[in-house]
Length: 363
Image (spheres, rainbow, N blue to C red):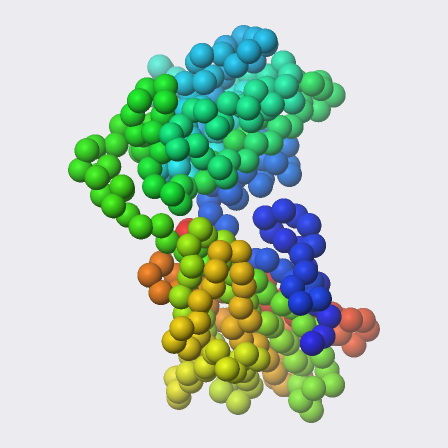
């Protein structure tokens, strides 16, 4: 297998699978996307969210701490807000709680207005939040992430962002209000009894995502062609076993003869392909993915004639039995393909430098 390169989107660090560095390029949730923007971009990202009017929404909640977090201990109001947010976001689709911003409606316009009210010690407040997380809900949420960032030239004042993923172990109850909360619009409501009963009866689902191995782009493969190649892996990031992973790919205007697909693990995976521009690679009966494991589902090889460069679009659906599928696309404009053809003549080029991976829908 050729050497490829990439970055783990969740940690920002290189990751290795079977000795090959890969892209962990799963379509991230809206909540995680917001958290990553704030964690990596700091105050500039927060200012951009406010400027874009990304105010309190289904996935984002702002809070101002009493005395701007100056209290020695975690204030009761902060504890109440954290408990409600952990319960409400985890029982919904996840979300981000940001401390250090006051968001309220303007009486004159009835529109939400955000005003930055930085914490006097962002790092210290983040520690208080981290210590409180395990005691604000029953059962405790074990996947909450906390990050802080300082005001430029004003350290240690700053802000704290808390990522609260959707719960995979059932509904979580706030120990402060003694209620199960649910995110609704920009508020945390109380879960109705009939909805709560359904939540308790809901079995945990596997969470499948995509790993992409990017092989080198080449001119020495098929004669007269520019060759791109990808390896697609399914990885189970959930808490339960996933059964029979599959990937379906629609390749639209790419001629049949210029796209090849194969399953390196032919004992456990099979390719289904007919005359229409779509194929599926699916695990055979009995193949499972334990939590934290991955499987090499298929490799895709795309050839583009040097004399007839064209745009590329691959719409992909990844899933397992009993869980909603994830959808994503690989796209490259004709200009990007032409640019890749020129660049590969001068230096080594990875396929993912030509084909861009994009989520197609919020997960």
